[in-house]
Image (cartoon, rainbow, N blue to C red):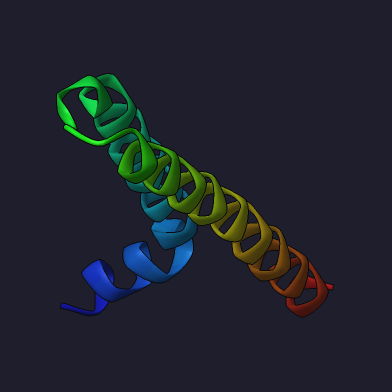
Length: 70
């Protein structure tokens, strides 16, 4: 159990980033099925915000991790 937790702590940022990127990609590929143009635009903006938030939090977490290792 401890090995699993250590793995998730060590690589959780990367796993989460890949999951968010895949989610955004899958939704963008299927956005043509959304009936309303306004909803498509709102969904695209939300996905872009999610991707930017994910990058920012990953960068902050990696920066903190580097400080702890020094």
